Image 1 (tube, rainbow over the protein chains, first blue to last red):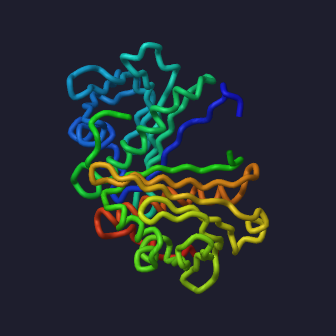
Image 2 (tube, one colour):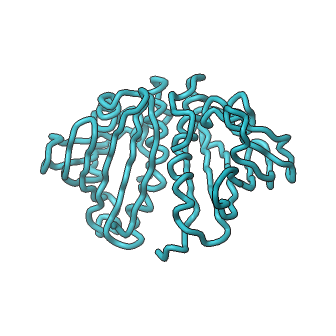
Length: 152
Length: 153
């Protein structure tokens, strides 16, 4: 694969819960502070509205615009990371939530519309398994998965 | 580097010993790995078999490397779909790493041929198997139905 061609990062998991609960866990601070490196999420979740992830110290860490919000099926947002020396190339993140028999299939797709250096994919490839493993544990057991508060 | 490759990482609240047993012992795999069991002496060079609830051999291979509770590498060939079997052996690796009472499990399944059907097949299977395994270890119950082998296979 040429260095400048990179596929999407996709992470799939299955959770013993309802689509509505998954939606709530993805979009409300009461949940994200327990599984997303302690970060607080904020938005009114209407297409075109801003959304933000704040670090525990109050700093804005990730922000963007809501592109698609079809509760409880699909959420798509522009994903811009704050505080980087060099800005992250364009990125959007989509969560697809599908009932699959007795469980819910959650698919996270991190998409980069333009070819980019693969170094930009590392953060997501390290981070998403931690975040989404924690989300599953929280919804199934009611308790957070013990994890470091920061990515990496 | 392998030409077809699937990598999946999950974090499970368990000890490495418990997760290791859950990956290989029939009393666990029957509950979540669609009713299958694995047979092996679990030492380097030993044969490895996966067996469906009706007794059919579904996959087979050999233990390449084994370090209990840390790392397992084994070869894996499909045995029930002729076209997939013809692709030959893939290589599957489990790496277990403990931090903060949570185990990071990395499953790498790869094959030295391009666009391997076996890797395409396991890529859709692993996320489900590892999700129901995580539920079994963290809640005491695997997903309803994950102890049943799919019909028509």
